[in-house]
Amino acid sequence: MSNGPGFSDPGLTDKDLFHLRLLEAILFSAPEAQAEKDLKARLPDADVPGLLDLLQKQYQGRGVELRKTGSSWAFRTAENLAPHMVVEQQETRKLSRAALETLAIIAYHQPVTRAEIEDIRGVAVSKGTLDILLEAGWIRPRGRRASPGRPLTWGTSDAFLDHFGLNSLRDLPGLEDLRAAGLLDQRPSIAAYGARARDEGPLVDMDGEDGPDPDQMDLPDI
Image (cartoon, rainbow, N blue to C red):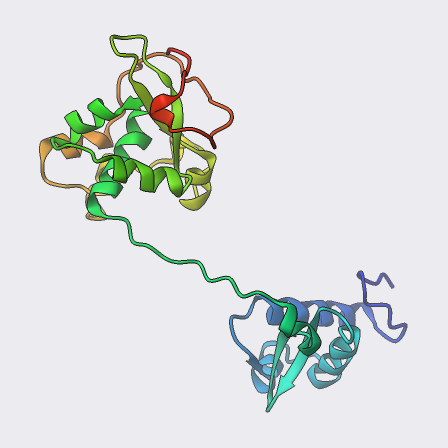
């Protein structure tokens, strides 16, 4: 019999070990305490009470412990560690329509300048809108255009792909998908961001994204 890490009880059969690991996974992934009767229903062939007791013993003295409250079970931080834990709450902010449109234009037309974004949207883009997207880590400077004024261009980041569940920019939804989801404005200029922009030249990936104001950076021409 092969035992998983941390489960060394010699009395465990392979089937017991599987059920024990499954219980552990269920309890770890559950957003709230799980009633013992529900666990029995999910594992009808297992000795759920016995396995829960064993799992509780396996976690005794660790940073996370299996605790029973009433008839429900849940993993909780060890009580003696609670005073040393710092609870961090992440503020959830809803992006404005302007920010969503700007992000979509950057995603579909990158590398794109602020003036080009404004041309597509038909309205001015405030610095605050770009700051919000930059702070979220979803966009980054991609270089400067080899044109008068050497305007800064923007593109999306790996964090953008990760947040929206994309493997690459090729996975971006098409025009019809955006329209069906109600994400396209009826203005022709906004609808245009569902189509790929023409090739403006190679992308220039920039290292050191943290630092001075991107508008003041001496970035390579593209």
